[in-house]
Image 1 (cartoon, rainbow, N blue to C red):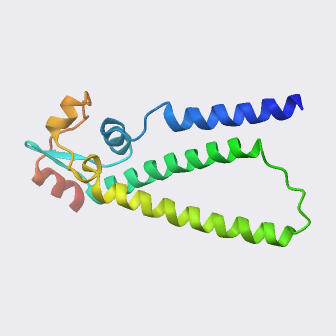
Image 2 (image 1 turned 180 degrees about the vertical axis):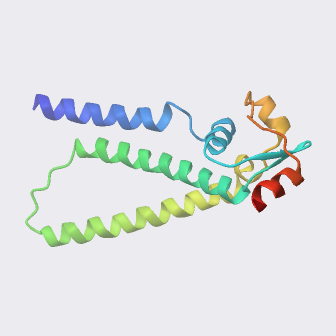
Image 3 (image 1 turned 60 degrees about the horizontal axis):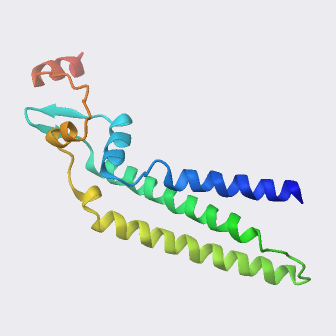
Length: 152
């Protein structure tokens, strides 16, 4: 009994930390995590990047938050769960149906967030990077130099 209580406690604490600790859905986190793994260039006062890749990155982060929430709920509900049913096929089918419904709901929620959230739809600017305390490591290079590198 002690190890069961300890196991559930660790699972609940871990999923709660993953869900709320880094506050993963604020604009600063979305921008920083995207810029760490993407190619970005600056042209005078504008920032050039793949906005579709940024939106996809935001979608992944939001999906992860929902997944952590599901884990937290699952761990919490497992405290009350006992499967003493002889109808294993019925249990399996019920799990499959609920699983599919949860996946569909998750995709719909994430797509609504992505479509209507200004922190996702708004383009990243150099001014915003300064306000967020992000100092991009941008080098200036002339178009002729890029052409020269590409043609060699």
